[in-house]
Image (tube, rainbow, N blue to C red; front, side, top):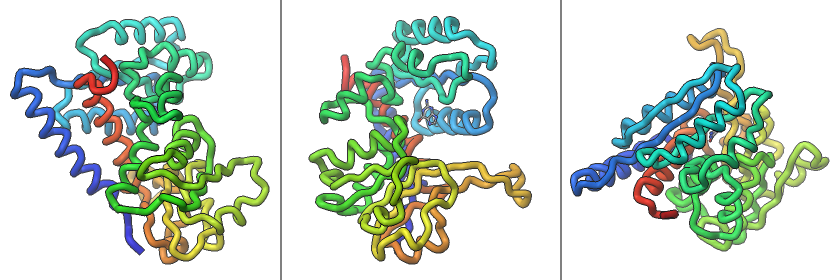
Length: 293
Ligand code: GUN
């Protein structure tokens, strides 16, 4: 069994990005600038955004954090999105999800200029990804594909089972895994809450991508000997022994599943760091106007 070290790969890619940014700036080019909009004080969102701001620093990007309280109106948020769309210094920006119930996430996502949508959530980017055109690919799916590539994991002709059908992970990663590309070219099955025989389907998988947000859902009896396991879960489970009061728990029962696998991602330190680094890569692409003018 080989552990997939997402943190080490992410650190290497951040160094590569930082070098490229230094070269751009030394040649008189513009330093990439990412803005992040954070509404409210959700613990998970606070942590993710703090990691994104820190990663910007490590990559040599400029970053701006824009905060609103939970009672911000949809109108006010949409006005800010419009300002960011029209600010020539901002290369890309994200609005951290989830948003409070009184704000339509879809409306906000569609208000973002797709040329600055470094999260890859806008329908233009989602659509272009699904037909294999250059676009901003959303960060978690892009990070997963990068890990598979860097570990030379064969995906062509393999049976890949994706657990979960979220717009952020399940759907896009299923799309990428079936794309005629490398990595990709897999036979993909997507399982979700209405799938009656998930265990049986998982047992036929060469690759399982678990992204349902259900702690330790994947157990040893669901995994074929030699399978590749990618764990996208990051649920905060109460743990009195931790200073924070919780531990991040994946969708895979790691201790019993790991011995059966050829490759497995840990939680934390697997997909998570790659997600952030994919956002950094999209920001660099936005800064260079490499995808859209
Ligand atoms: N919430 C959970 N993951 C993400 C992400 O990748 N981007 C944004 N904007 N919000 C999220």
